Amino acid sequence: MTTVTTNIPPRDYRLSDENAQLAFARGLASAEWYHTDVDRKAIKALMKRHDGPAIRDTLIWLGLLGVSGLAVIALWGSWWVLPFVLIYGVLYGSACDARWHECGHGTAFKTAWMNDAVYHFASFLVMRNPVTWRWSHARHHTDTVIVGRDAEIAVMRPPDLLKVVLNFVGIFDVWYSMKALLLNAAGVLQEHERSFVPEAEHGKAVAAARVHVVIYAATIATAIAIGSWLPLVLIGGPRMYGCWHMLMTGLLQHGGLADNVTDHRLNSRTVLMNPVSRFIYWNMNYHVEHHMFPMVPFHALPQLHALIKHDLPAPNPSIWDGYREMIPAFLRQLRNEDYYVRRALPPTAKPYREDLHEI
Amino acid sequence: MSDWIDVCATDDIEEEDVIRFDHGARSFAIYHSPEGEFFATDGLCTHEQVHLADGLVMDHIIECPKHNGQFNYTTGKATRLPACDHLGTYPVRVEGDRVQIQLSE
Ligand code: FES
Image (cartoon, rainbow over all chains, first blue to last red; front, side, top):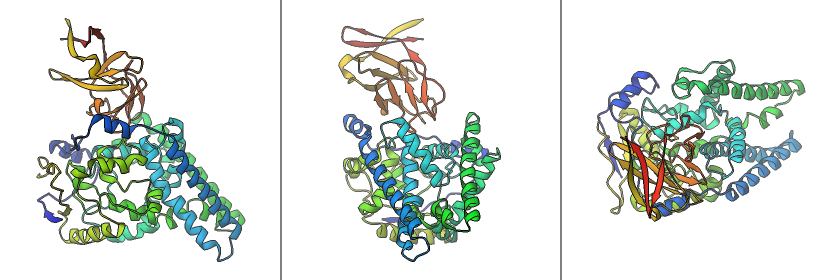
């Protein structure tokens, strides 16, 4: 691993027309990204859709969510409820993100309505407008970590570490999500949302936000009516007390790596993880692979990793190792926002794509 | 004026697959359907400039490799967001064992 400093002007993350023009002028927006060469037959086999793995995992997920939720209700008022709250919280507030993500790509299931049903359910759990976020994620894949274009940069430079820490209990995310849902429900799309959601979709975004807001309002009204926190512990609350696993894994996707490049090997991180985290995260730990070939379903990502690892930096062997790489990078970026971690490529790899890196 | 342009041999494209065909400054996607018929559309997705030939063919649908926009390649119709605009389609014929596309100059 080497450390790199580049000479980039101060970053302006607003998705404004001016920043879009700048990104296009630099060849960074809607660019052609580096891809590892793969045999067409092999990648076709990996892209092939199956319902089986996602049905199995979804039944396990919903089953565990239901059982732990019922245990929370049954044991409410006793200390025995705590372990079940923790399990329910992670299944709700963390696992939802990966289901939202995979079903949004339309790759988790072969059957379209199954992708859509889980996508809408998971969007509610993760407090994201299913319409605006579908478009924001499309942009994230077009312009991954391109400043002024990507709406989903989790840690901007210089990093706001207090915000990062507070987001482990969803403080900022829930605040921004609720604000967006309320505005959308009132018929207003924010400026950055309007920059990536086509006008023809605005009505759908408003309708979806209204459904979410009505459910949250009913939950709060029930909690007040029965004089108990239980409804909020079951609905909405887990997006705060159960989102730590989503943050822990999600920050590793791009944290501390390059921005304004067109080679996912420079701005994304693959981390090997334990099977429980991989279930919760639906294999998104293979993040370089996912960005290079977004149409490969979650269950085929380990095989994709085996197919192209000769061309990628070595994966971090654990979550712990990923944090040992990322946190010092965040700290360095406090003093020098141009700093990023640049991992060594194996001798079998093609060189990093450098033509667009220096600006 | 329209010309029939030679693209490839019929067995250069597997059934239920697609290849890229560049001609002059234009790019096309040439499909071999599960029924053994050949079709041609614009080569680039209408959402962004991504080559459809890197995507997956499922029955009569081509799925864009970037954001899973989908098109019916027999009609060019966009069938899944974020693809909203339809693809142009082009006549294709098989002469002997060669696939040809008709393009107007
Ligand atoms: S580029 Fe084809 S769907 Fe976005």
